[in-house]
Length: 273
Length: 144
Image 1 (cartoon, each protein chain N blue to C red):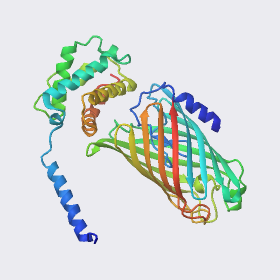
Image 2 (cartoon, chains in turn purple, brown; image 1 turned 120 degrees about the horizontal axis):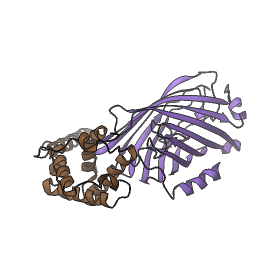
Image 3 (cartoon, one colour; image 1 turned 45 degrees about the vertical axis):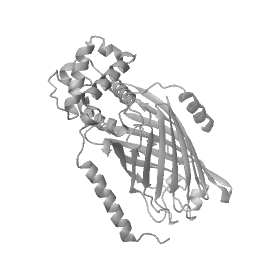
Image 4 (cartoon, chains in turn purple, yellow; image 1 turned 90 degrees about the vertical axis):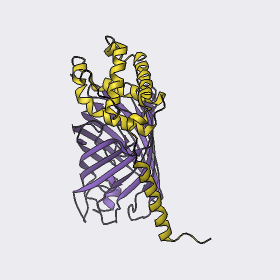
């Protein structure tokens, strides 16, 4: 998957087929493969397809915190700016245990209403992310009930032109119904809590057409009783054209599997066709 | 060196805020910020030039009388950007009916307008405020 995404990325960034959206309006790619920020899926669909076009995109991302590292690569398809299909593979390295946890995520997102720039009300989408651990040993060991699960989410987003003293302001709010532990890498469910609605939010200011700076928040449940923390990041995204985007972020993931102060860096690149 | 006290910092912050709001108390209209009539003419000329060189949307303008378009768009922008004009040309619906402009081509024209604004040196925040004024007209322009 990784070499396939990397190859597709390389090919895609050379040319653009669908370019019917305004620059930067698809957002970037989040760690579960959906169009979004870095950790939050947004209401926008991946790629530059308008309602008469389809688009493909591919991405790879790395999050590197104190005791762990996550690598993700994935592909996305946008069908007529109505349906987004995505597939991503996560590889979570735990050097202390000399092990890697791998998870596959297949997802669909449907745009129900609106356009982040033009409609009176925010763009509204719903999505499902189906997650499956390749080897559930660690998840089971820490007390997870399942090794696969489905996250359902509702997202709404809006770009306000010139709203902040002439600068474009973006926000997204997502509600996610999930029992995933650390996005599913530590399995699903546990003794302490089950499926519940969790709040996620992102906001950004466009410093220019090409650069956006923002922050994100993702509420996390503590199903396993290991003190799972809410996630936060501060990001800067560079979207120089409709073929490629690059995002860098500073992450604060709090406590992961009982090991606290997990802060570090994140980089992501997406190529669009 | 002794640092400023919290109160002193607060006073400085307040003074900065007040001086900023003083700047905003005599706001220029967008019409003034793009350089009034001459600025609008430069912008519309750059925009016409962009369209003339574009393969994607040029066909929509094939039947267009360029000087009529130029006069109309300058006057329309002057009106929309709070200048001393009253646009009395054809409505957006009248102009675009039958053209069947799709989402892609509409956004492509927005891209060309942004390129024209870059070309004549309109500042990024002013560009966004102009786009914010024009964006609500989209429903009177596309898919009719």
